[in-house]
Length: 343
Image 1 (cartoon, rainbow, N blue to C red):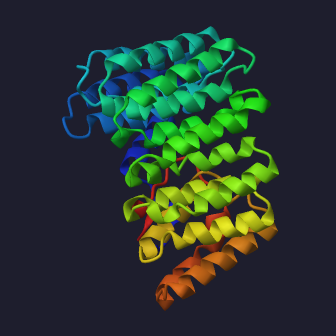
Image 2: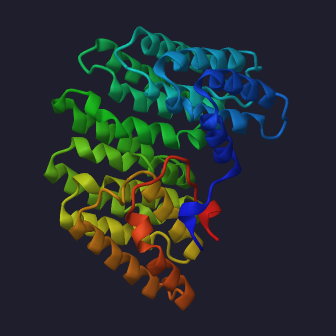
Image 3: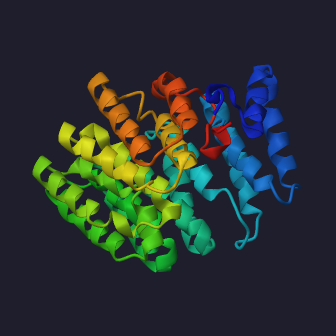
């Protein structure tokens, strides 16, 4: 890992090129590149997904035009094809949730769930669930939509339910306070009933629901989750560790230290690349930069302990020390991803 802060993936370079254009030319350039991607069999959808992440670079008035342009192109694809529905839904965060535009487009995506293939549903349900937190909680449609999303998630095969169940647990704060614990435990029990691989996927989102619980309930739930970490397959352990560590902000110091230890222990035997993958994801999600000095020192102590226990090589430990300040720095605008940052 030579200088991760300077690495830019080609798809992000494309985004920066669009930003560099005069404002009057950028909407047309976005549309032309987005449409041209349709003709690239292998990577076209990937390019379109990346372009949708640039919505915040455009004035709000232009975002509406670009969203509807991208939506219209997505509608042309056959139901069985890979598509951009979840990315379109996620891009609604770049609009005001008080606007009729978001209300209408969210509802359109919710209705579309019934007509898209299972793998696309499994990606769209978690995004639509997460977006419920941005609507006015006094609007009765919020809980009605939660119930509908839960029904859609129940209809998925268990092999596709993990992310949906985890996110439904994550957003139980939309319920009245008296109902939040019961709603969370229903989702937690559902997640525990899933196959191990889907349980591991659910753990990326499930611990976020702990924020809605009382300190006593939270302590019980953290202990319960710890008892099931061994079920997580190796391929899901970075994702599960991310879920545990992301919720540090509403854990007390003792629980936060245990979360770091348990999260890192999930990576036992996975090697240096897995640790960097986890740390880069945490940095990209602003988790590390928001740690207090005390929590950061505690985290560094746990990471050092983990590297010693895992018998990391001296060069590996030196790479960690060389990048320790970068890890705690605020993430830059373009998307940074896992192993691609390792050099």
